[in-house]
Length: 196
Image 1: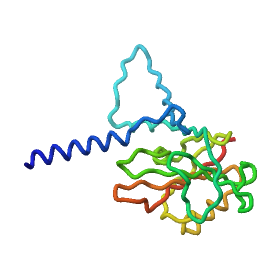
Image 2 (image 1 turned 180 degrees about the vertical axis):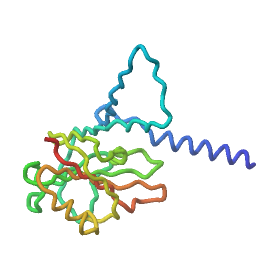
Image 3 (image 1 turned 30 degrees about the vertical axis):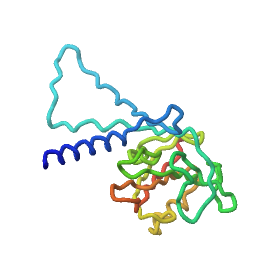
Image 4 (image 1 turned 180 degrees about the horizontal axis):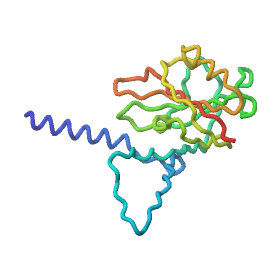
């Protein structure tokens, strides 16, 4: 009986992990590319022996490309209207302009809990400081990545000032951090600066 239960548990785990890697449709609103690291040149006359003490090369930078963004009014909570789209807060009466030169721009999307089909925010979890973003007609470089308890946008006054007080040429991406145990309790906040 124990062997049968172990086999059923292994099958369930395999099926749930496979469902997390569902392919995105061809017209997906975002993509990620890994930029290959430049190949090291070596002399053709001397054999190259790897040095086990050398640090490994850093991972190649990622570039997130967001091609479709829908407008969304500012709300009291960060709750995008659906689970498959990326939204920009556009609410001139609240000071959120669809203009990079006028102030920071905010993109929101959902991330799904582990074991469910992924949403756009699941891809955002892979981004790191130094990675690039192509969105809203500009190129951006990630300067900060923070996880904070869910609120609008955070209860940390210093982080709130960096987010809401950010000047022109700043892009803020906000999504939830997926968990195995139910609803997300934290948001991932990514701050990027427009590349010159």
